[in-house]
Length: 407
Ligand SMILES: Cc1ncc(COP(=O)(O)O)c(C=O)c1O
Figure (cartoon, rainbow, N blue to C red):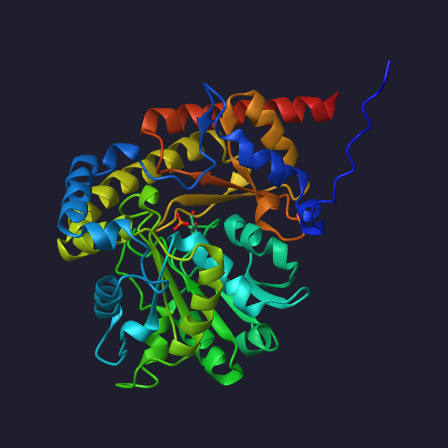
């Protein structure tokens, strides 16, 4: 019998082989039936304003058929760019349309910043541990990373930023740690960016989700204070999104930066997707102008605060022999660090999946994959009884792991 010769195909790009095994398995793990998913950074779907968004969708297509259904400008709809510029301006920080790019969500912004700044082997100074999506977005650029620990009181921000193509930070309730960067460190980072010239990316999906205490000033606001009244031309690249405060499905985000940076990002976006959907951009504009975010915020904050408290209470009951953590004052995550430095959370993750709960192991937030001592737990997606059951399953997995080690 004739054998069919095996097809000789061109090799896939090298970067595809640079991800770690856990990341690869982790990304597909959240959808197993019966599994309690406390791994992802997902909003509570019962809070999606579905009826209101359906009405807005109909309204914008009927009122603006050509603009919504045709190609939009690469930079974004002028009215939406103006609205975003006005929303983020302060007395000192002067923003105009030229400072704003509308993106297909925050993740596209991260991809674009990698495209315009990083050649293969280029250096990124990234807040450590680092948002997995950012590592994914930049993996094809094959960068080098300098890990920057913003909780380290002895950190020298100038040394941290010097020589990097850009610094990446999530000052409000970081993903994965949920930590808030304090005002002195914010000021120091902005000062360092102005001194070194290094671009300072401020990724801010969680800034509206604070449960205790007032918000702190944005890095771009602090940067604008240094050049009051001039159209913003400083080093901060601010990134926002509707994903965590309205819905992720609209895929609307924005970047606010010096006009020269916006122009470069536009070049990259042209080759990425030509434009963000006109339908969802117009919907975002109506939502912003109609105060939808402000109306939703108290409801979201109350629900998430109660869920955070429920998760932390269940953790205190079942996990405190193994882990320690701080109760986060905002965002979506609790970062639990193992008391025993030898506890391997990659291994725990696999055992926990079999026990019916998915959590995020710390290795996926480390460009080297080496950090295996912590877990990220999400409290926004599930109601309190599911959070408690998820934590019980995790505790059972810890016992199984301990028993296996004694065998
Ligand atoms: C730190 C951070 N940046 C960006 C994003 C991207 O969100 P989106 O692409 O939905 O705007 C996320 C989502 O989890 C995030 O946690």
